[in-house]
Image 1 (cartoon, rainbow, N blue to C red):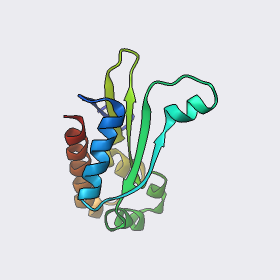
Image 2: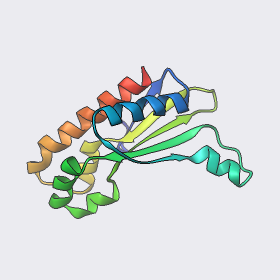
Image 3: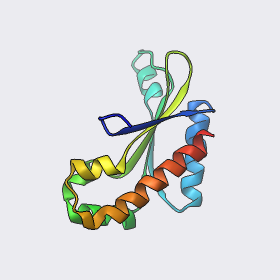
Image 4: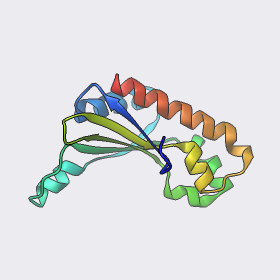
Length: 132
C-alpha cells in the first residue's frame, strides 16, 4: 500500500467481468450494491476517450454505522468503493481505500479497531476473488 491509502491489485479479467464478479459476490453476501458507475461511458457521452473504468459503491449499515458513530466525518468515505480500471498497456486493476488508512484519516478510536480490521479483511477477500 502506498502512502495515499490505496490498495491496488491486478485482475486476470476485463474490467466489466471483474466488476460483474465482484457485484455477484456482494449480492451473495447480502451486501447492498448502491451504484455502479461506468466512467468510460460517461466520457464517451461527451466525446472524450477513457479506457475502461468502472466504480462499484456498496456497503452494509451494520458495518458502517458504528464507524460513523465514532466519527461522522468517515461518512465522506462510506459507503465503500472499488474501482476497476485498465491501464495504457491493457492491464486491469482493482483499487480501493484501505480501511485502516480511513480509520487514521478520521481519527477513529481504538474501540473501532475490530470493525476496521473486519472491513479490511472483507475488502481484500472480495477484491482477490473478483480478480482471480
